[in-house]
Length: 318
Image 1 (cartoon, rainbow, N blue to C red):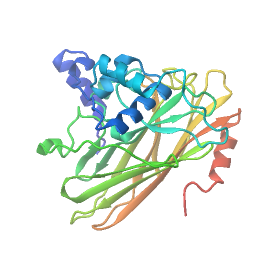
Image 2 (spheres, rainbow, N blue to C red):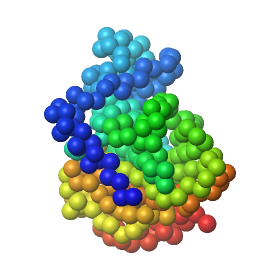
Image 3 (cartoon, helix red, strand yellow):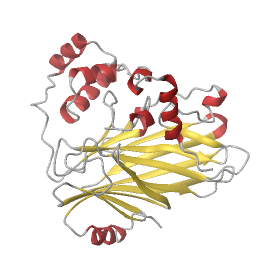
Image 4 (cartoon, rainbow, N blue to C red):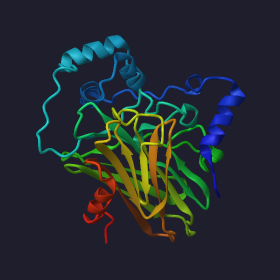
């Protein structure tokens, strides 16, 4: 089924005759404890450079509570710790509170943060892409998962709410997450940063009694936060399946993504974003299937040669 959830979102906004922002309920998440509070404030202030209003939208804290906590933890935009020159790329859970898109907001009402990670560029410590992994999963059952809440999934049609989750943060910079859906389907993501590439894995386990088929996945790399890559156009994109690459305004740098096995490559100019969307093989009861992907950064002019170099790293797996 060639299902197009974002068209349905636009129809929803048109019917209500309200801006998308007014349709979106609060998606704030109050920190659970002092450790959690400190992590998210460091994340939002040191790295994402959030304003107080954005921190409020992400956490539900009052501006007074935010000011007190920032003072207590001594967190400010000017005292971010230096990162080692040979450190892996910085990957952080995306905090919400700032919409990761520039445009086509009606196609991403009430985005969920537990699928989103920020990958910071190696050449600009304030620039990042937001990777939605996964943004959507389809199966023969229908829309099996969606990282927004404005289009019905097979679960919302049954009035089943999914639990809010958070990324597991590992000491070496990796993050991972696992979600168990109703009726026995489970999936998860692992994100592993290296010095110039972020390796990713998606897995899905079929705990139902029937084979799952047509397991198409939509993974999104949103470019709003990456200076020089945020033009709302596809003229700066190169498509060579499974690779999609976005060229900087000066033509000297590239952001690349790829997934294997790739179902389709495409980009959405108004967002702006780019996709290398994979597809799981059919998954029998009790089986687990895996997909591999990456986000890479390249400085140079021959991006096709860079695709070949990346191929030779063996990222696609055995």
